Image (tube, rainbow, N blue to C red; front, side, top):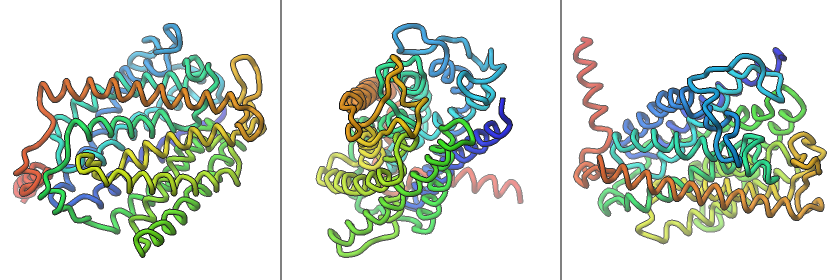
Amino acid sequence: MSAGDTAWLLVSAALVLFMTIGLAFFYGGLETERNVLDMLAMNFFTIALVTILWALLGFTLAFGPDVGHGFIGNLHYFALNNMGGAWPGTHVPKLAFMAFQMMFAIITPALVTGAIAGRMKFSAWIAFCVAWSLVVYPIIAHWVFDPEGWIYRLGARDFAGGTVVHASAGAAALVLVLVLGPRSREAAANYPTRSVPFVLLGAGILWFGWFGFNSGSALGANALAANAFTVTQLAAASACLGWALLEKMFTGRATVIGMATGVVVGLATVTPASGYVGAVPALIIGLVASVVCFGATRFATRFARFDDTFGVTAVHGAGGCLGMLLLGLFAHYSLNPSGLTSSTNGHINGLFFGDPSFLWHQVIAVAAVVGYTVAVTYLVVVLVKATIGLRVSESVQEQVGLGAAFAATQSVARKESQ
């Protein structure tokens, strides 16, 4: 095992965990005052909840030896049994790999909270998060990330989670938004952004942590990690500038929130490609991402019943899918020979470098992950709705706010401590 590779992976895991805190600040800044504590609690509680689920069952379903046909892993690593030695194909301990992947499992459902802000019960979120983290996330992680998964063996590639994290979060957000329905007109109309500095702080933490997200996926301190680090920065900067320019063209002014959103768009879109493309393709990916996701955001606002509060579907869903498809154009074997070698030992390249079949495999991967996520998420949401219910009442949405319970608890705690 390598001390340097292990240290880098553990630091990367911590960076990805920090991203969820950044996400809480990002969404909390966009939230209205009456709901901000609920949003912070949803993200923070997700960290603790998914940690336990991943350690007990999620990791082994995602990365345990395949039970057949590349669909799901077995219980070999149940409750973190059999975790001695190095992870296959790496120079890092199995526990380090498990911890790094745990942080991906945590942030993926956390991303969804931005779509349901202002109207979902906290108890319903807990029930949804538990079920989704067991029957959706580990399954698609096995398909895409595990070399025995059927999508990986097909020849599709996703370096750090374009489908597993972003497309799946966007698809889950889509289902929740449609089943929950929109906020009441009064609640939606009275929804001012609480704190632009919090939004920018959250975006900055996400940008910082994303280097662990993408570079850490190299699973070592090496040239591949350096490439992923570089293209991550380039795509984020390109998308930030692109979004600002589009805002100026279509609304007459560029905003700080818009620039922060552009950064997140660029980061999400380059994620699946970060270990397989070079600098110039990364700049193009960021620019294309800003155009497509900006358009998707404006298009979504035309539908009154589609109330994705903070645009999770348009930013993460569209961005993750787009990144997978652009990878199908720009991937180059020379940048990552081990990652771009097929199950038959052939070289994998993007369409622009002579391999049209790779783009087709990327399309299949996106369709499969989004289709499975939509179908199973719908079943989970319907079950939660039928048992404990999904929505808070309109009076809570419009007057009291979802953060009232947490505010009351804090008030009591302060009085008791005095």
